[in-house]
Structure formats: C-alpha cells, structure tokens
Length: 75
Image (tube, rainbow, N blue to C red; front, side, top):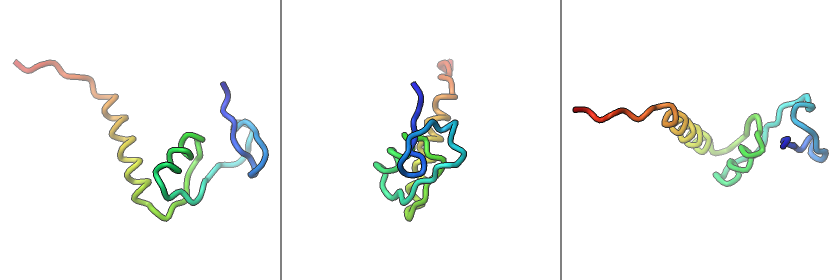
C-alpha cells in the first residue's frame, strides 16, 4: 500500500514524486499532532512547544524501551 499526500493543497500525489517538504500549521492539540504524524508530515508549526517536547519524550521513551532486553533474575 502506498502513502498518498495532499500536494499544493488540493492535488493527491505520492510523496516520493513531490519535490517539497510538508510542514503543517498550526498544531496546538494532541489530537491534531497525532493526525499530522499519521500523515508523515516533515514538521509542524505550533504555539504550544511543550506539546511537541512531550510527544518527542514519549516516543523516545518507547524507542528506548524496545531496545532494552529484559535482564535475567539476580541470584
């Protein structure tokens, strides 16, 4: 399944064929951020930088948790 994106505000195209980056604005709510992330935007503009910092911290924690292997019991 290929991902499709809105190009130039009205046309659909494949991201590989688009020669521009996609920066979405203004993303000020967690629900909106989830939608934009799901659309694979390259970046966002926001009036709430803490929203982005919290999101990044959460995703970093998830990635680190996946990389850590469970350790055996200590005797």
